[in-house]
Amino acid sequence: MLDLDAVLASAQSLKPLPASVGRLTAIVSREDVDLREVVDVVQLDQALTARMLKAANSALSASRTQIGTVKDAVVRLGSGLVLSFAMASSVKHTASGALPGYGLGEGELWRHSVAAALAAEVLKPLARKVSLPPEAFTAALLHDIGKLVLNRFLDQDTSALVQRARSEGGLDFEAAEASVLGIGHGALGGTIAQRWGLPDSIVVGIRFHENPSRSREIEAQAGATHDERAFAVADLVHVASNLSNHSSIGPADDRSIPELDGAACERLGLDAAAIANAARSVETRLEETLVRYG
Picture 1 (cartoon, rainbow, N blue to C red):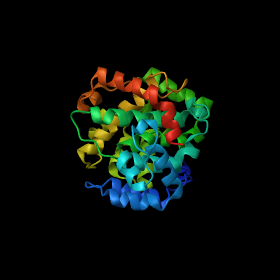
Picture 2 (picture 1 turned 30 degrees about the vertical axis):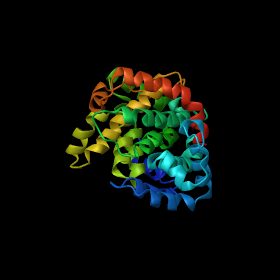
Picture 3 (picture 1 turned 60 degrees about the horizontal axis):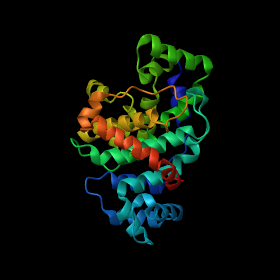
Picture 4 (picture 1 turned 90 degrees about the horizontal axis):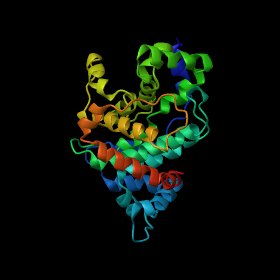
């Protein structure tokens, strides 16, 4: 088992988020989002402004008129997508490398992360039973951030032990990681998100994306209380990640693919037809979305 202090110390080496991303996160996670404040933050970041205008004028935005101002771009895209674009600019470089401990080649984690964010975008309006917060997209984009750190400690033998714990012990991947390493990538990712000062919904969404049906029980045992929407984000991120992994866009050798939690789908109000339609939409739109997040 790994030295958890060493793992958490390694997590500290991840670059902190830019101040503009922190401000956007605080604004977007409020109950009443003021788009004027979003515009004010974006306007001060030239790279983010360029990305917003490019995205707002892409085919995916379905805009019939050319958009030339940050205000119009924010209105077109919505605060949730603006935040996910800002976050992408901060983590893309780090998330684009190979992760041999997880069987992921160069760029595969980033591709999966963007596909999951797109899946969350497509699935969010189809979720009939819950109201999901705007930052759900960002939770999906960052859900595997813990793998960036744990990969540093996963050699061939350790990876084999995790797989054995999963296949022989009947554990989900998060539990298998925890049994061998002392912590799973979801729990570590949640800790990273917390240290970055991200809102509760993103922390919970990342922490429990592998096993959302256990989230309420685990947090209750720990004495933690959360808005119900945070648990709904964990459900959405789980389904979005699973959709990405099990479609033709998924990584060729991701060793951590979880089974789809039907209870999460039920809590969201997503049926098999909705998920299948969303998968086709993600497959069709992924390449342009990767450019949009570029």
